[in-house]
Image (cartoon, rainbow, N blue to C red; front, side, top):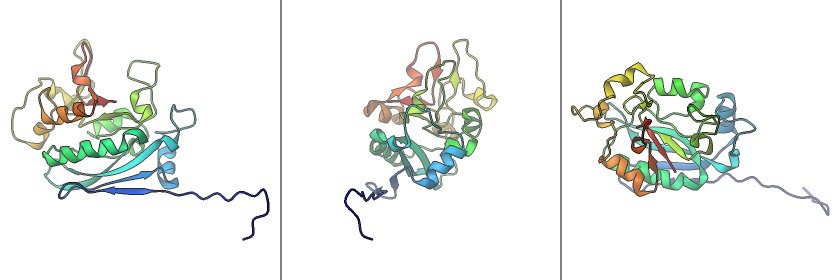
Length: 217
């Protein structure tokens, strides 16, 4: 094709980065491709008017250990500024054997935080307001992650837990050696310390409200 003076040739390049730095662990980072964009829009997790554009987000595929002790590939969307860091966090979680029930895009739950939690889904980006607020949640910027939300519930100032499956986890102690019990996040646990090492704040440290599943940057 000939290009006349004044014409501009535009080339779109989607870069995929594969990170393998620990035996068995695998992660992939990509920009938001048209296919992922379609999933996010149709799944109501991103729309025009959200505080960040799709160009500011990255799609991650990450290997993790599930509650059956099996290795699986999960998916998550985070802000591009923290994408490499998030893979390092999950690499270390994999290394210490920390289990994750499942890791799917919130789009698979039509953008419903409630349904994602009911499914005990670990997730990050979701364009929504913060719980009990009119302000954008940290999730709307791709800089917050909820880990195993059933085992690590949000507890109101009055001690209320919305999800019935989380009620047994009100008492924050390790009780047995099941994978679900290993998923419980306590202050001195290695999993919590891994996030804090990278400067992420934990909802379990909040005064009043407790959000044990929540980490934000």
